[in-house]
Amino acid sequence: MRVANIIAELRKSREAEGISQTELSRRVGIPQSHISKIESGAVDIQLSSLEQIARGLGYEVKLIPKSLLSSVKSEVESLQKSRGDQTQQALKTISDANGNLNKLPTNARIMQSSGIADLEYNLNRLKELQYDPADLKQLVKLLSPILRPAGLTEFEEYSPKTQEALKKLTDQLKDFRYSLVQKVEYVQGQDKPKYSFSEDD
Image (cartoon, rainbow, N blue to C red; front, side, top):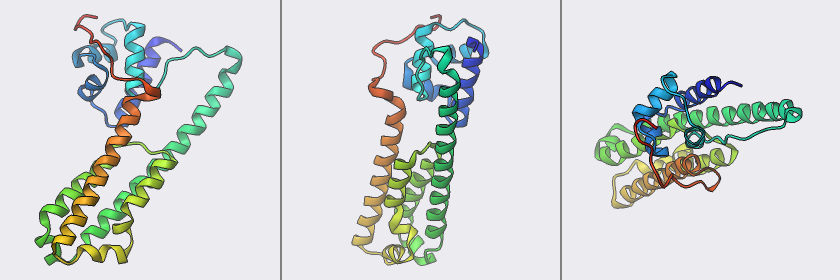
């Protein structure tokens, strides 16, 4: 595969995951303007830059023996399909949770407008991410209080206990999202780069 094709695939992956050039720049330490030039083909990319961009999107640049290429490609396609299926299920789970929150009595939503709005905001931010089977299982577990009608009744009455429950669930969703982002940012133990590139690297 030509380098231009690899760059095109990385850009496609970035856009599919809703990651902006600015966010990718923050993750990998390469100026956004340089990422833009790389993606548009305005500059020749260095191997070090290619590796950092790939890792920032959850990939690794590796040499594969030609004899194994077909098998590896088949395995990757299978994993990508599985990951896509899990993500679709996760999006449905988030949609169901949002739907249940909207079913709360009007007076409950008014009395707890701040807590519910914060919860909904952090819930919707989870739509931006990709999920594997373990992630999906954890998501369902976290959202169980608002996926089950019996659990949802806990939020219908305004009280300090209810406010605390809303805050606890919101904080758990924030921590969960952070852990998913970290899985991308620190692929295979790769920390953020301890150097940055100049605009003309």
